[in-house]
Amino acid sequence: MITLKGKNIYLRALEPNDLEFVYAMENDQSIWEVSNTYTPYSRFLVRQYLENAQQDIYEAKQLRLAICQDDDFPAIGLIDLFEFDPKNNRAGVGIVIQSNDNKRQNIGSEALELLIKYSFFNLNLHQLYANISVENVASIALFTKFGFERIGIKKDWILLNGHYQDEAMYQLINKQI
Image (cartoon, helix red, strand yellow):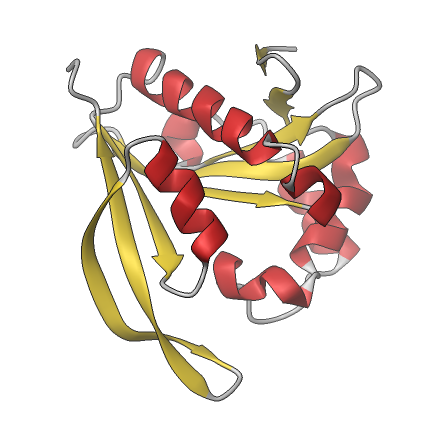
């Protein structure tokens, strides 16, 4: 098993025993806004997804990794590269941490730092981007901490509770390539 290790956490590939965790995350309506989810997922669909999670990023055009703290393997969050575009050397980034207690421990910061390094030095990406609601102050702070710059606003992009919100696009360019 290949892992990306930090000081307090590590990132690893999804495993079959992540079924209940991924099922809970995908069906948590409080994060549907950031994950562009519109309907619940069945355990059957999540099981199928996990069975195909071994696909290479070049095949699947995405990479989802579990964020873990303890050596006994349980995931506490997920971090994704999506819309992987090897021709133009770019990908989108998304991150979600399950509990508020873990959010306050800088776990998201460490996970994002590991993913940025992996993306730039292992995948040789030129840029990463993130789409973040302008209302999501915590995510904006997280991404800008690592040098992501706001490059534009999509007006009335997200319909939430009957009201439209703007979404900002943030970009990080690898200056070493």
